[in-house]
Length: 158
Image (cartoon, rainbow, N blue to C red):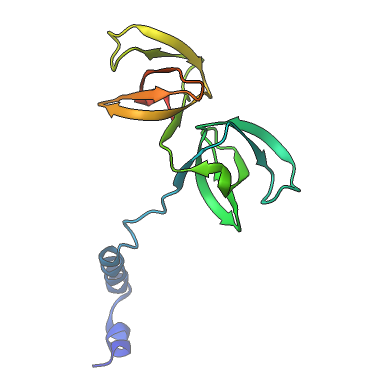
C-alpha cells in the first residue's frame, strides 16, 4: 500500500499523533535551541550596534563578561547579556572560559569558602564578571580579572 493512501485513510488526530511520535524519535521536540555561552577574553572590549567596526559603540565590557551567542555574521557575534541587552562583538575578543556575572541584589557577599559559615572576603555590586575556578554544590569559586578570589552562591549569578 502506498504511503499517500495510508495517510489519506488516517483521521486528523491520527496524523497529529504520528507526527508527534516521529518528532520525538528524531529529537525535534525534545531538543530546544541552546544558546552558546562565551566570555570576553580581553581586558576591555567594545560592544557595537552591528557586525563591524563602523557601527556605533553601545558600551564597553571587561574580561570575563559572559555573553549568550544568538547569531553570527562573518567574524562577528550577535549576543544577549545577563540583562537581556543585545550587542555585537568580534569573535576574536571572546573564548570558551566558564564565567558568571553577579545578577541579584545591590551587593552580594564573596566568601573565603563554599558556605555562609565562611567569612566575607569582599562584597560586589550587580554586574561584576568573574571566571569560575571550581564548583562545590551550589557554590562557585570565582576569580575577578584583577586577581581577587572567593566563593559565591550560584543563585546570585548569571
